[in-house]
Amino acid sequence: MDAKGVGTDSKGFTLLELVLATFISSMVVGMVSVALTFCLQTWEHYRKRTPPDAPLLMDLMGLQVGSFNSFPVRFEGKDQPLLKGEEHSLTLVTDHSVKAVSKGVTVVARYVFDDGEKKLYYAETPLDPYHPEPLEDFLDEKPREEGSDPTFFWVELEDFTCEVEEAEDGGLGEKKDDDVPAAILIRWTPARDDEEEEPGEIVERLVVGFVGNASVGSSWKQQRQVNPQPADGQPSQESPAEAQPKEDSSS
Image (cartoon, rainbow, N blue to C red):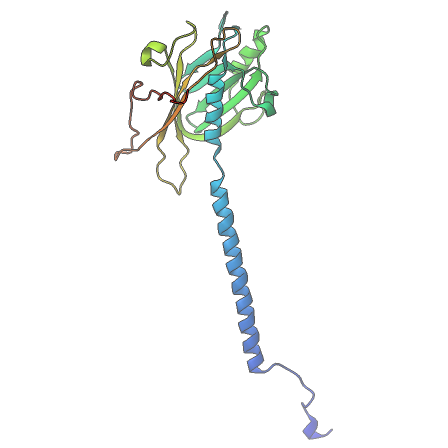
């Protein structure tokens, strides 16, 4: 073998080629990283723009109170219109239902707030005024996420209270039935986001609109007001008179 021919057929990369290849690879990785970061930021931006479920459920409550049906049903041992508000719950018969659940028929709607879980539960069932047993079972049903019939849907809330108001309490309109309140005052606080400041309390005054058997009109008014948080962190309080809705000048 010729000593001069040793190694003459070996091939490899020069130092300059290795440096250029490393530089080009770094640029490609950098561009991919920037593009991925931009996509993630865009996705996060649009994700945060998705409206929360709580205001949608509260809007549904306003529509249902405004479409209250005063047809008497049997509960608590007598025939009477069903609109019952307690501190953390609201139950009523309404002509406004969720079409995906009840196909748009008249329903009994029920809202129950669990202060321990910080969840507002909602369920509805078609109205059957001639068979009180299913209605009583529905009113006694304990809200839960799974296994209930009908199904309870829920949204997260920091707080929720319901107050029944008679006409003479705040001058909210003419009282139409001795067994039915003139208005419902709802106070609720959205669930707190770790990235946001302490949410303010929202006050909604829902004037009961009558439809159905004792119909005297189905107009309803709604006011949504956010109470700012004072320095001590406690939500400001307002009297029923201060929270009265303003008249719509267009009507």
